[in-house]
Every structure is written in C-alpha cells, then in structure tokens.
Length: 393
Image (cartoon, rainbow, N blue to C red):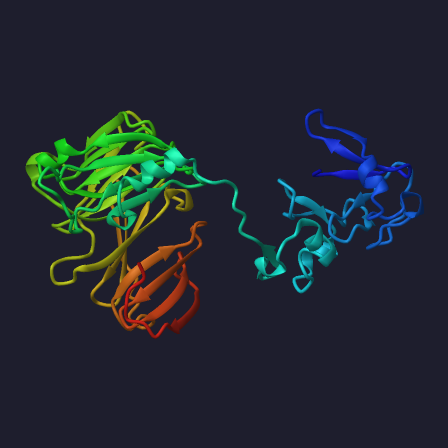
C-alpha cells in the first residue's frame, strides 16, 4: 500500500478506492514491523508521538518514523506503486537494495539493481507484446531500415521506411511507402499511404510530434502536413510560396512550432502549429552566407525566451555562433547577433544540444571538444576533449 499509519493499536493502510485507512492485520501480525505499542518516538529525529500523530513505517527497514522523516518514495519489488521510505533508506546509496530478506522473499537477483548516484533502479518487464502485434511489427521487416519518431511520455510511435537505404524487392514489389503509427505497446493505430507524395517526388525531410500529439511531416519543398494518431489529416500549410522554389536543408522543432533553414540561407518559422492557421514568418537576414555557411542549427523553445519568440542558434564555419530571433511586432527589427566565440571555440561547431529546461546548451566542435554553456552566454560550465572527431548523432 502507498501509505500506512500506526495509531498504537495496530497498522492501518490506505484503501485507495475510498481514500480511507483500514486495519491491516497482515502487516500487524507479520512481525516485520516494530511493535506498535512500543513506538513512542520517531526512530530518526526522536519526535515524540502523541495520540494525534501518525506513525509511518518505512517499507525498507520497517522502522516507525514521523511524517517529516518519511516523505521519500522508492519503487520496490512486488509493488506496483512507489512505497514509503525513511530518509535514511532513501539517501543511503551504499545500502543494498532491496534488503537480503526481501530479495529472498521475491526471489530476485540483487545484481539486477543498479545505482544512479544515490538512487537505485531496476528495469521491469511490464508485459509481453500480444502475438498479433508481434506478427504485425515483424511483417514490416528490419526496423533498422525505418525512420522512427517516438512521442514524449510513452506516446505513439511513427515509422516510415528510410528512402536513403537500399531496399531488396521482388518483381511484384512497389517502391511506394507507408507511414505507420503504433502505440507504445506495439498495437497499430494507423497506416497512411505515401504513394501520392512519392509519385510527386516529394521528399520527406523529417517528422516530429506536437504538444497536442499530432504528427507533423515536413517536406523539402516547404509543405507541412499534420496527422492525428489515427491517421487522418489535421492541418497542412507551406513554409514559403510554391513558386519560390526554395528547398529545406535543415529544420528544428519544439512542441509548438518549427524553424527551417532554406538553401538560400533564409529561415522560415512556423508558430502555433496545432492551430487551424499556423503563423508562418520568414527571416531573410540570418548572419550566414555562402562565404560563412552554417554548420549546424538548434532552437530554444520560446517558453524560455522573454520575448516569447524562439531563438535560433546557427553554428558557423568561422568558429562562432549566431543567434537569430524574429521581432515581436511587425515594426520591430529581427535580432541577429554573432556571439564571437572564437576565443573559446577553436573549431566550427558541428552539433548543438539544449537542455530540456532551456538553461544550458552543449556544443560539440569539429576538433572533438565538448563545451557546455548557459543559454545567456555569460557562463562557461565546462569544456573537455572527447578524443572523438565524429559528431554525435
């Protein structure tokens, strides 16, 4: 049970269906927990229990502790939810987990538990895929030949065959592709024919999931099409007019929008992509050019920017980084700022990764150096040589 108390007359556990405490005779009589009547003080802070105070039991050491000393929760064998643990057990990274008696009780191998700092974790096999799901996924062939895009938080998974890979075909085979959407358990939710796009020789440049769980497909000609998890078309829009004949050479996304770098070094930006009519803008001056071409791109989610507009980071061949941001109003000029990082970055940047909270960014340069900065560029956290010239994926 996720919570228990001891009122001096036995152990009570929370009934989650009614949110009330009921007597737990099994735990009271198990002998593993301390004698309720003898617990006058918290075993950690020596807080004196009165008849108004609850005595909580640590699920690891079985000692009675006060509420302040039992706020931590740990996942333990045989329990589907996190269990109450005292401060000592939760913070003691060197303590065997689970205890030997519990290992024997649940017939578990202690070597399956791993330490991550002070926390202990174990990989649990929750369930097996249904045979029908296994057959369906296996029928797709080698999954290494597919582009796979998972949603956050265990959401749906989109898959489509990678056109850049060679495909073995028989005489009856077809080169037309199908976009599949599965849930995290492996059940197929939708299959979308891409034959119309392949016939028009439209190249799928990339995919990502939006905040509202729509699958956004970005094509190299600037067309963007979003699908629901059941495969129906939700919205479609273009990053630039069709007669412009630009091509997308790189794009970065977040849950509410995307930015695309074009072959003429302009940037197309789409905001509110889950709305009926997304806002699309073009930034012509980006601080890069054929003489100073970009080497990589990243975007800072507008949630972490005071202006509410995304900040685009462009690595340059001059060992620097350019920040590009559109003006908030139509009359406000766009911001283009070269950070002049030549003194701290000795080679062109080949990869940029921004922390989920938008506070830090890691840049990997072509000489194998990894540098971590904050996104305001006023503090250098660390820099070290990775001894690798290959850029991270």
